[in-house]
Length: 509
Image 1 (cartoon, rainbow, N blue to C red):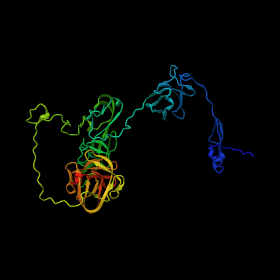
Image 2 (cartoon, helix red, strand yellow):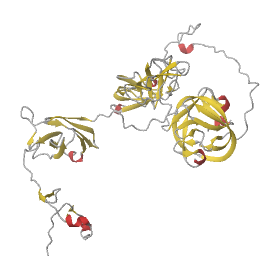
Image 3 (cartoon, rainbow, N blue to C red):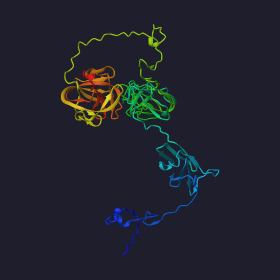
């Protein structure tokens, strides 16, 4: 008995399913469907044939590869990819120019390499890649015009950021054609021409973070948020003073307001809310190297605006004042010196002896390593009391960089504690016998830290210096004695906002 099969929508099935008569799809499937096309309605018909249109450019001597290029549902092409060229076919004919010559573009691929070319397409742009050549971009400019060129890389990918903090780079200008210099020989080589160099500002000590509700902002004020740098370009009007709004600037071009610009009252005076923040940079910039000068210097073109902190001479960017750098001032006038060379100037620095405060209270005794409250939150979603054997975020206060290191909990103990709060609202509870590494005075105890600065960050771990604006007695709490090597680490009283506390041997002496 023969059965009639009215539909073939199941298509060909695998030999391993030949006996699966229990499958619903089985009745609509085929063992072999050769040179046929199954329609969406169930039937099938012969596939269309091929037709000879034109001989390839190197027909008889070199091979060519045919590649589909579909610009839209109404317009498709076939690309003839041959030895160092590409030609095009559309609507059953070869694409030619106004003079009747075949439209062709030059490619870098030889006959032996065209088979290894991999591709992807989006609308009128096709990306071509091959392990022996730089990535290429094929563009459809019009119905009969195409172009091929190297794929332009704007932001990476980059190799790992240089971990050697002793090696520094600086650029001569923030945009345009620049000279990139290194304070160390052997950094550059001639084969780096064409490469992208990533330059970031490692010293943000002069840039305060943007804070909602900040008072006293003036036009030209510089603030940072989300790793980007902004300048106050305009202030809202109508009040006796201005407050920053609640919409944190995060844009990377142009300018945006952080508040509505409305006028409110504090009960005594009217004030307006809103500052127009102009984007300056992203805390880093990119230079495409164009020419080799020496192993410590190359020239290039800025492809992403450089921050001001990476400008200057090698090893002394303009926002870093040092004894050997020129900073932002090139000449210092020192009265009474007649030496020709400034390095021969003699300067006497007067000082006043610091005496101990007779009213100072002795600091509480206890294990100084018992740093933070056991219920403090650590980056990565864990509590301080649970970090034993886990990697925690450790902060280098000199460079404000983060590295992850395995932590050990030596003990949990009850300790009298302080609650520290920064100007952005980040807070942490530490034991009273803990000293933290501040920017202004080095290691100090909690009751002397108000008004000084500690590194603060969110979940992005982009640490920046913030003043501690409030220190309160937190009573006696369970405190974790955490050890992560000779390193500072970050903790917070709530998830998403962290303050870097101490865990270095300097603080324990």
